[in-house]
Image (cartoon, rainbow, N blue to C red):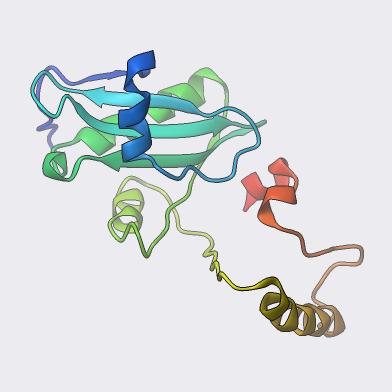
Length: 172
């Protein structure tokens, strides 16, 4: 696909006064295990910030990649240019893997975009909100069935994602 992004499109880190715009484009980064890096796609005409991407550095991967392009700027090569910048960061930090996350309900365009960009969908995560008592009543029997099936490794435990070791979450 030819690059039809408005010129001169620049990819750069956000300035201190652009934090609100970054939070509007990427409002809910995944639960992190350290600081996130951000890059913006900036064009000379309004809206000046056409897209944003964030990620975290891991041992052998950039993970938690979140990318958003302003709806009126989509299908112009901006998302691809942001991903190219992420790939450059991965190469510069000798990270052979790039792991992206997307909420398919809120971001239905994410999977097709990432797949077209060479990513492979490897896992789905379903989140259910509930009261603690109702969740316990559903999860405890399920965990017991998984343990009884022999498919759960000895010593494994069910924990909230925020308490899971970062390297193991990155491998998901």
